[in-house]
Length: 69
Image (cartoon, rainbow, N blue to C red):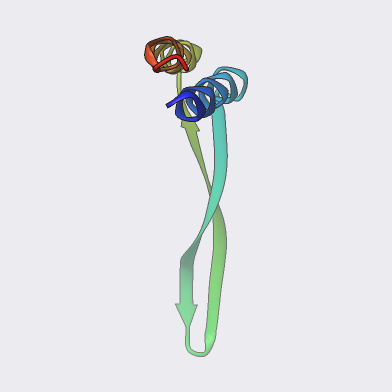
């Protein structure tokens, strides 16, 4: 359980630092005979840094509740 808690804390830290992801998809714009025109379309995926803080809190609770040896 300790490893899981640490991984979740690191994931929450990454979500807090990087609050957006940009990715591209290919979209067919026009097809005229044998000619196919393709354009890259940009997409943004944004989230609040508070989500990362909440994920870190969950990881902290898991780490705190893990059995002690």
